[in-house]
Length: 410
Image (cartoon, rainbow, N blue to C red; front, side, top):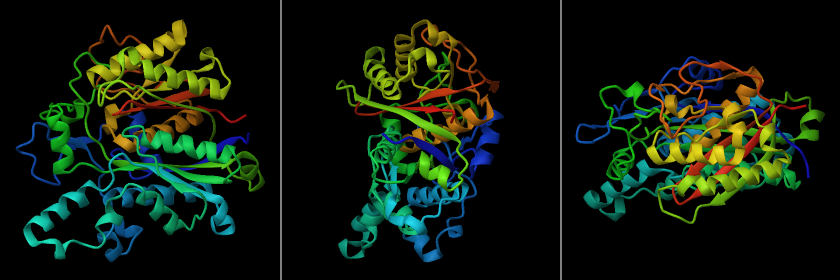
C-alpha cells in the first residue's frame, strides 16, 4: 500500500479566515461564538453560534456566481484554494490523477428554506433552476473540482458529524490503492439558519447560555448543557509520498490509519460506554499497525453534550487503559462550536499543526471537573507537548464513528 502524506491545508471558520489566523486564535483560547445576527433569533431558545466573520465570496467567485452558490460551497472553495496554494500542487499538470472528496452533513439548507418560501408564496414557476445544484451536498466536491480543474476521483461522504472524517478516510484509501496521486479532501458546513437552528433547538441539543456566548461551549465540563452550532470549511491535501517527494513538497505529516464503525443503537444518542467509538478507535490503530501506548494525543469529538463527552471519555479509557491518563486530549469545539459535517476536517488541520508546532490548543471553559470525565483535557491554556502520533475522533447522528491516525513524518 502506498504511503499518504499531508502537503497543505486551508480553512475558514469562526476563529479565522485562513489557517494561520485560526491557529493563533486557537492557541490563544479565543472563542468564535457570538449572538446570531444574520436573522432574528428572539423567539429561539438558543440564540448563539460560532460564525464565520468578514467573508467576501467575491474574492473567489464573480458576483453572479456567488449569488447562485450555497454558502457551504463558497466556504469549501475558499478553504480548497488556500490548501492547494499552500501545497504548491500543480493540478493542471496531472488533473486526471488528482481527485476531490469533501463531506458535508446537511448541505445547502438555506437554499431549501428560501425555495420553499418562494414555492408557497409565488408558485412553482418562480422556483430557481439552480435550486438542486445549490442544495445537494456533493456540490462542494463538484465546485471545488470545477474551480481548480481536478479531474480525478470525485465524491462526498454524508455521515452527519462524521462526514468530513469519512471523506478523508476515503481519500486516504483512494491514494493507498493507487487510484490518485493526490486528493483535495475535507468538509464544509453552513447550517446557521432558522430551520437549522430551530431543528436543533427542538431536539434540545444546544446550549442555552445566550447571555454569555463565549462560555457556552464547554466540553467535558460538569456544567455543559449542549453543543453550540458552528460553520466553516477545512480542506487538506493528501498526497502519495513518492509523488510529494519528487516535486519537493513540504510534508507536514502522514496519515497512517483510519477506522470506521456503526453503533446500530439510536438515531441521535451514542451507544453506551462509547462501544461503537471503541471499535472505530481499535480499527484505526490496527490500520496504522500501532499499539495504544504509541499514541501521544487525542483530538476529541468533544461536543459539550452530556452523553457524547461521557461516552467518548469511557471509550478512550477502555481502549487505552492506564495509558489514557498519560494522553493529552482537547476539543477545539470549545472555541469554534460544532461545525457538524466539517468538524473532523478542521480538527485534522489543528492536529497537523499541533504535530508540527508541538503545541496543543486548550479546551476552554473547563471550570468544574466532571467525575465521569477524568482525563487530561488541556484545560483553558495551551500546552507544549511533543506529539508524534495522534488520533482524531468524529462521531455522528445515526451512529457513525470515524477515527483518523496522523503521525509526524519521518
